[in-house]
Amino acid sequence: MSAFQYKVEPRRARMDKLMRGLCWGAVCLAILPLLSLLYMVISKGWHRLDLDFFIHLPRPVGIAGGGLANAVVGSIELVGLASLFGMPIGIAAGIYLAEFNSTRFAKSVRFSADVLSGVPSIVTGIFAYQLVVAPLHGFSALAGGFALGLMMIPLIARITEEVVRLVPIGLREAALALGIPRWKTIVPVVVRTAASGIATGLLLAATRAASETAPLLFTAFNNQFWPSSPMQPTASLTVQIFTYAISPYDEWQDMAWTGALVLLLMVLAASLASRLTMSRNRPMQL
Amino acid sequence: MPLVLDPPKNAAGQALPVGPLSSTKKRRATGDQVFHGLVAGSAGTIPLIAVAMLALLGVASMECFRTQGLAFFLKQDWDPVHGSYGMLAFAYGTLASSLIALLIAGPVGVGIALAITEFTHPKVRELAAWLVETLSAIPSVIFGLWGMFVLAPLMRSHIEPLLTRIPGPFFREAGTGLSLLSAGLVVSIMILPTVMAVCREVFNAIPVSMRESAMALGSTRWESVRLAVLAPSMPGIIGALILAMGRALGETMAVTMVIGNRAEISSNLLAPSDSLASAIANQFTEATTSGHLSALAALGFVLFLITMILNMAAQGLVWLVKRRVGA
Image 1 (cartoon, rainbow over the protein chains, first blue to last red):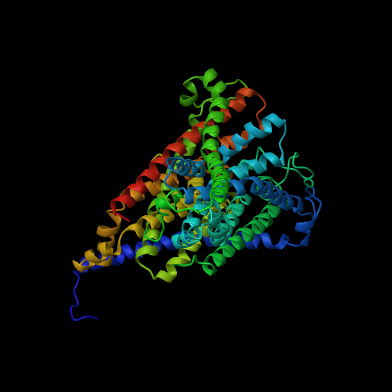
Image 2 (tube, each protein chain N blue to C red; image 1 turned 90 degrees about the horizontal axis):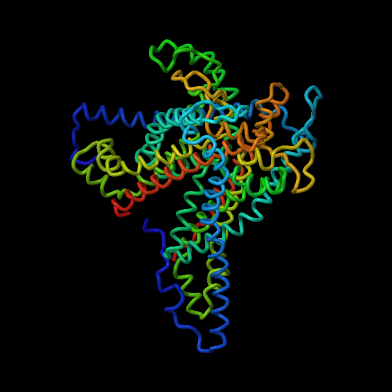
């Protein structure tokens, strides 16, 4: 240490220790329930986790075996439908926000995106119900996908904006200096540079959509059979977990834990994947 | 944030020299116009959705507001059979559980954010940031499952008997474990990432030189954090708490599974309760009359308005700190 070792009064030194200790205590306090959650999901979920889970329909209470294959397929269908309409709009909106960022319109878009991302998902569900379920007179995968897509748009837009903005201005200027029109500098040059970042955002949004339950309760509803058409009520992993969790049967509650394990593994895998792509493809610095 | 590169205004197209041929010039203009129309149109859907949501929910809840009048906000009686709807009991459950959550997640979240940004190595910082992000990605139905089958039994067998020894109105009588307090606890874990993430952002916006100045004056690590970090970021911390409150108010699945779903107003935190969002989740598919549907839509409308106002306030505060420290 330096020659100017400064002696702190014991009272202040104690306070320093105490507050630092409290901060680290807070970290431990937060990790505790998280560990408990992970442990319970794994220990209660793994023994029903087998091939049956992914290839069989749910069986009635009392009959052994069965899986949640329809719910897995249903979740994929719902997220697919949501992506179909949420992703293009979200990406395009994000490009607009990044490239034309100082207009008044851009500010109001950004503001409403922030408002929308704070709206409780159950409210989005009511909106989708009024807009799709009520006119079509029935719960459908379409309505569920619509609700999830609505939630994806602001998220994707803000992430896309962020990564597109990270693309160095020199790249744009170089392209424009070649006499290339603006849109051709944006799409093949700027957006392609930001592609891995955008992909990460899409993955994140899809994962978020797959973990939603509330907006699906009265849009996609639930179904004990394979999804047949987008106009039919469709099962999803999350709604199925909820239904089984609040059921009085032990077998179904076990199944809920297994469903939770599958969902959790999916979410963790997506989070890990996005982490890896992010660190591998740092936006280049000019 | 010096890293974000704002495209300068001259990149907007007009200022730059274009090619010499008038024909290419024309083609360019149309290509750019189509592109601009496409992305601006997509961007336009976002405010459109927000406005449509507000309008449609408003229209859907009209019937309820017309038949129930102001009483909708003031009475606790919720009786679909007799067509009488009052949101007070649900509002109480939502508010109480969110406040409990905030009381826990607030100090803990700020503490963690401090531990991560101030008292640790940058490598650990990145890992911690990723952990927090992952925590926020855990589906709420899984938190609900954990709350129902792990937390609630634990509360019933171990924690509630202890709490009932505390005199006062809050812990009068032990219950099943499905209670306002359990709901608050689960939600506190769920909003922790929001508090942490926003606080981290705010703390990081404060220049290192401010911490160094405090240290140079002879302060301890904690004193420098208190004077140079906590004090100037107060509005930002409040913003983080408001944002987290918005999340807590709208949390549906985990609360539905843990709160006990009985619409009663009781100061006893160990008693079951119900929330605005859980009422919607539980009753919407069962609602058969237009009055019932409209009343549930009205709950959603109220929830929408509250979270919207909270979000706007929070963003304003966070923006204020960032501007003040000149980051």
